[in-house]
Image (tube, rainbow, N blue to C red):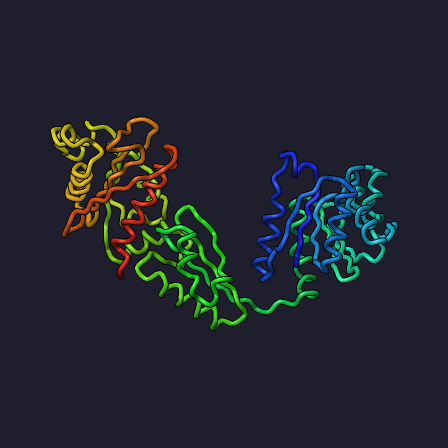
Length: 401
């Protein structure tokens, strides 16, 4: 197992975000390794010693960051020395390097920095090309210690130049193949239920994204990875599945391939659908017009919705959504028009139409379809869900190529 120990009180009291954990996990994953455990500890020698001893007993590869500076609370070196029974020694080469570093900067050498030249016996030094705190590697009993500074820029440089190559030496990794896809319109729990019959189900990784769920699968055998991907396509036939991580780009590219243009008439989403679509480069090839007809007056003025219709059925209704989509398509001469009208809250709901009620219309050359949805959450969440669902409905309409 690969374990990560991040040290520093600043990680625990909210002063500093632990970006190092994210960076290390990403680099390990890209190299074909899994981070199995991660913990943040204060600058407490006893706690660090206990964690290291636990890892050594497990035969783990331990990556340790932080606590290599010159101050009294930089206790990582002494904690490792105590945990391994390897006394600290003064490395004359490191000391000379520290003095040369300050000389190059025309600064006096602080005597406190001699601490940064102290290492546990048997350490393999990892030079710090961006600072003064050298990293080091120790093989002890059945475990391995890989120690790096906590400063992110210094740590990341050492991670790529020293740690990953060393990890490959002690744990050779085969060339891992990976496939990934994105499933839209259904949640993680439902996806997990649908894939249980697959032989590779236990090795599937799930990641929720703003628009859908990312599924990924890794294996040294490319044929098994291909088999998994084909199985996913078969399992979710009829659902929205794409290899493109950017759902919005996938929609726009599919519209462009089919030579289709789109118009959007939205009310409760306040322009979020138009904003999402026009945020994709090249949107002008498919996106004709976006109207935010928020008030009843605007619905009449820009879309020609009959005020008596709004008065009779309400602005949030099937008939208004239908007319909004139909008029948006006709006035913009688009191939498809989508409309959204609803109650985002927190007020405005009723027994018949509670907060979260949203009607979505879709007008094509052959028909106008309206769907009713009931979303949960606060105003921002309802608006986001409505935006997402509208784009999913659009994707579904153009899904068969």
